[in-house]
Length: 356
Image (cartoon, rainbow, N blue to C red; front, side):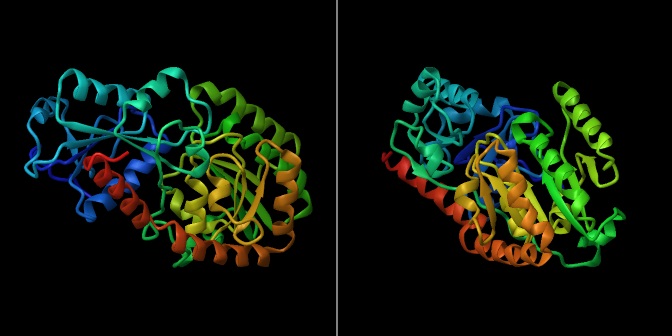
């Protein structure tokens, strides 16, 4: 896509601030959701750095015009997803007295700090991205789980979508995607592969994702373990790839071994690509994966359980194919991004109507 024309501030009814330059799970959510909200008629614009040029953007100086309501006559929605964005919204509404309603989406699955709780209590509407994250909220809220754009994430369609087109060894690929760090459980995946791949010669393990400076030592240690096991050509770090969607289609099995997560979109992205998944129970994984049907779920941080859940798929690639087909049907039925758009819009409407 090219640059999207800037929207007139008088037309904008929802502002989605994004006050973080680096890629994160929140970024992925915004990038996928906002185009679908626009298609559904939501008059929404982003504000802040770190987002693609094809999303509508406000300039910070445009906020000076927010004392005037949009042409619809409604108050604007300020949809925050981080603490700093809640702070900014409270300042605009309560200090500058701009006609705004504040909505916050919470993905955290931990007890909030007193500061965060105080800000959440000042929101006009609150969304939890899963039942588990909602359990940590002390205010009325609506659960709206993230969805996936199945026009972007889809099963293999061409020969290039097949693992054989990668030029890497083996008949089947088992993948793990995400930032390379302890929190994501990359080491648990590597240890499982070191234990299993010597017994299953048709499989190659692929790890995609960025290594930030503070985790370079962690990454180097993993590469050293792999080299000592003599598996350098079968456990491959690709780094941050240009198009991870292609790799989801090439994987026969996807593993999400996170020790903790906010929500965690990667299993849904893999499932929409007709790829079976083995996940921990971190984040919302247990609410999206169906153990024994679309994949398997294991306790977060349990390396032995992870290895034992993966092995039946390596021993029987047909099981991976069957569960991948089930995963595609499950996502199509329950996790289409259109459902998320409708759920978020319902919260906007209730918030404007004065309901929590």
